[in-house]
Image 1 (tube, rainbow over the protein chains, first blue to last red):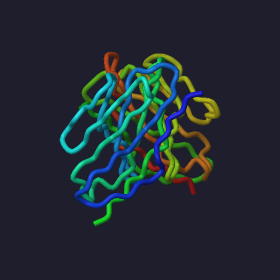
Image 2 (cartoon, helix red, strand yellow):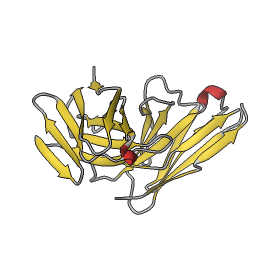
Image 3 (cartoon, rainbow over the protein chains, first blue to last red):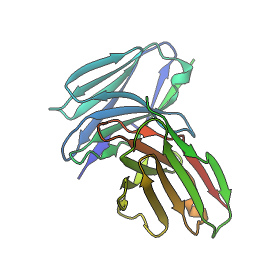
Image 4 (cartoon, helix red, strand yellow):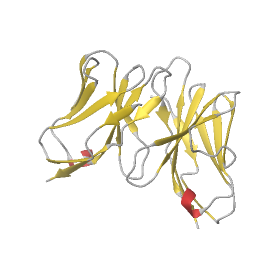
Length: 109
Length: 115
């Protein structure tokens, strides 16, 4: 079966760095997405990785290792507005998105 | 990024009535549209995938006669929740993807409350 695993909840301090991990087992792979979702709102796109390595975009970076079925989202210089759920999703061989359950990130002052 | 507009953002309806939710791609042609449902504190659950001009493909456990999906044009898809019941209360989100895109763009979501 297809499976995406990510931690349910994480807590971090304002100004710090946090890494949210995602492991996956899917039928085929056409890229991995990270989305941010604030409560009551639709997800917003953060990053897309299809090749191994690190993609940096401002305070957010995303890493992918296809051989390990592993990705992480790295958030630096955390701000209170970063409190949200972070969803990992993998596009399988049929170009369907398989979603993780999301990681709720709580930022404390 | 591309813009997807979903309407309405919130709707309250009486049990037994039907509700239609619209999803429009404003600046691109959406060959594929996805409809999701999200219950509180849970992840997105794909309900169905629709390709323009074709019948929607429903995920297992989703009643096609209850959740009617129409994707008649490259810029509009609709989800109609028929004979809604309180257990259908949820957050419904559409996303749209163009023919050459890997990224799908999300609508704003619709909060449905059935009373």
